[in-house]
Amino acid sequence: KILAKRAVWSPPGYSNILLGKNWNDCQKPMRMMEAFIAAVDDAYEGEHSHDIQNLKIIFISRRPYQTKQVDHKFVGRQIDNQDEVVKAIKEIPHVSVTVADFAHMELKDQIHAAAGSDVMVGMHGAALAHCLWLPSWGGLVEMGSKRDLGVFFLKIARWAGIHFENWINPYYPRHYRQDNTGDYTTVDLKTFLPHVQRAVDAVRERKKAAFAATVPH
Image 1 (spheres, helix red, strand yellow):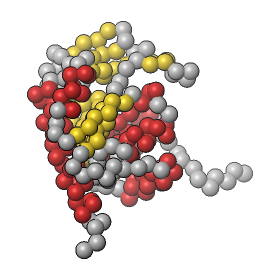
Image 2: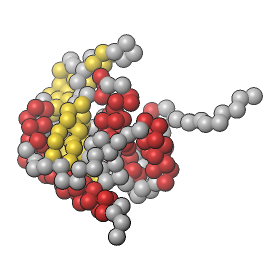
Image 3: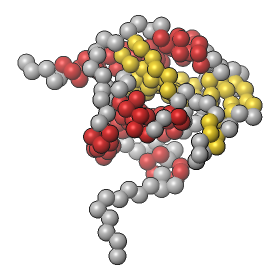
């Protein structure tokens, strides 16, 4: 006999019922998700920024990588003009931008980096699941090289109660290329930046409201 005081059952890959492509289920914050986030927050002691005016944006970079356990010489959904995109985001007033490649960070450092940010921006990919550790007022800007990549991160954002924006390359298959190390999208700043600006504006207001609620009257 085996007694498990704490157990987590995880269906393999995309068969997970929480991440199925059917979007007729719950589209609002879930107590189960909130409890899970709180448990991880406590375990890893994630700290949130208290600066209301100056928001912290974490930009998730995707590049080929190799570790002792993983060999990812081919990585999809890379950004051809990443430096240009990051520079444009930095020009938004009252924000600071940190570029992170989670493939080269320990899990604890990944969680701390997300928890200390207000807005997460990045291409569709597993790293965006770290939006769970954003503060309750946080926001996620998911980027897509093309349509029909799935609603996984929309679901996660809705269930976590954070703001969500989704930019998709409007010119696909233009502004898109592929070689032996991955596929690449050239991000059109004119269509992309409004999503980031909306997220910043929404998160700033949500953050003000969150801190106003904690001030005794």
